Structure formats: C-alpha cells, structure tokens
Length: 324
Image 1: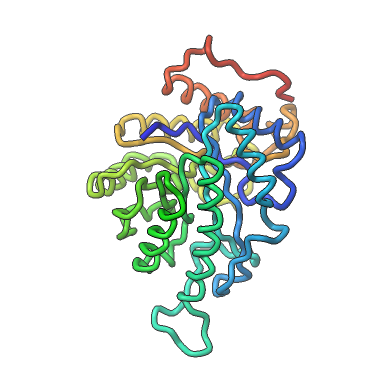
Image 2 (image 1 turned 120 degrees about the horizontal axis):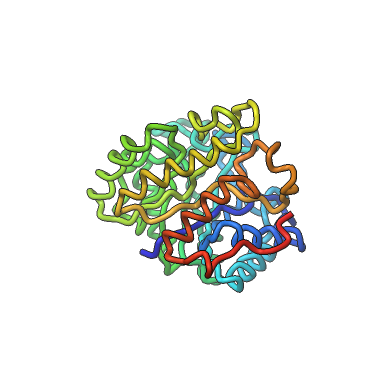
C-alpha cells in the first residue's frame, strides 16, 4: 500500500461549501502548505438522534454530488489522490459512537435492521460515486463504537460495497478501539482515529501493532489532530476544551506522533484533521484555537515530515504564493 500523506478537507460541509473560488483556493493552499499527496472528503449523512433509523444524505447539511465530484476532479488535476469517507452524524449533536439499538428487537422500538438498511443506502451511494470518480480508497464508516458489535451487518455491508467499488475498502474505528473490532479480516485496510495524548503513543502503538500483525493488513490513522489550545495535547480528542491559544503545543503534538510512528514499519499514513474551505487570515492564525493548522507551526511540522518521508527534497517542494 502506498503511504498516505493525507489531510481531511472540509469534513461534514454543508451544501454549496465545496463550490466557488474560496474552496478551490483553500484546497490548493492545503496541498502546497502541507506537501500532502492525498485528500479525504467526508460527506455527512444525518440522523436526528442516536436512536433514529433513517439517515438523510440529500439535504442541505451535506455536499451535493455535483459539487463533490467537481472538487474531486480539481483535486485530481492538482495531483492529489482522493479518499472518500461518508460519515454519519446526529442532528442533536450526540456523537455518532452512541448510535445504538436493542440487540433483540422489541415491538414499537427502533431497530438495527432498519438502521442498517438506511446506512447501506448511504454507503452504497457514495461507493458508486467513489468508483465513478476514481477515488483510491473508500472508508465505509467512522467511529461507530456501539454499532461495531453488529458483526454480521458490517460484513454484509462491506461485501456489498466491494460489489460497487473496486478499490481498497477500509473502516475508521475510534481511538482505543482498534483491538475491539472482530471483522477486520473483511476490509483491505485497517484505520482508526489517532487522537492519543502526549506520552501515550508508545503504549498505544504497541497495542495497535498486535492487531496489525494478527490480521496482516495495512494500517493508517484516517484521522489525527490536536487543537491549538493549551492543554489540548493531553486530550486531543476533546473538541470542547477551551483555553488560551497555543500553536506550539499543537505542533509538539504532531512532532511527538511522528517521532513514535516512525519506529513502526507497519504505519502507512495519516489523514490529518482538519482543513476548512474558508480559511482565517494567516495574520490571525495565532488567535485561532481550532484543529486547523493553516499558517501555524503545526503546518510546517506536517509539511517537513511529509516532504522528508516521501523523499521530496525542499528544492522540489516549496509552499505556494498568496498564503494570506
């Protein structure tokens, strides 16, 4: 498997947010500023609550197929390889990991079989789009912690995805869950969300390595990131953390991750979280506290690592102009 030097671009963006000069310029700046070779697009499917059975992927909360295909084409013209990761979210703000139903069906209660039928329609729609547009990987779901135990349904879904999409198929489990998924044998690539705290990387990577060796599959972090807030490096998965802006802590977090993952020959890449379509001014970067790393020391850390790891000398890669 080719190493993935990736960035997640505008995850869960609303209708129209992938259109226009601003979004296209942002993608170009992402490629130039990070030395990325891959971009991950994550169109959203929305259900009202964790116990809703229906997933809507045609409303204003997500990209239209036309704009998504247009952005995929533009990314490919720039030399980026595209990974598609359709992801379910809940409209009431509850994290998708809590989507859950009774294992034994109860009359008048919502049911797994109805939810999986809707989820299948969602995933197969984008699997067909990934095939049509030449995406290099399809990630069929993200951080579905409570749903992961439904092994038979996931195996059936992935088999159907592979009938529609001819490239490698992955599933993005959550942090700390890599050794909890029992059906890794039916995917081509194992992936997870690498939001691990400072000083925990060694132990967590050792744990993940046992999974990689057991299933003999490639592995990469389909998400990895840290906000530029003091203290976020200790809880990088917690987007509710608030505090003083701290760009240096964000950069140190990435550098520590690179230092530890570099000793793992089985590590096959990253999908850094995240890069928006509408960027703040580079002059305002020091006040931004989001996961975005545009115009921050973390951007330079990622670019230096991606360029060095891929063998692209600095004379071959330079940040593009007009970065303000």
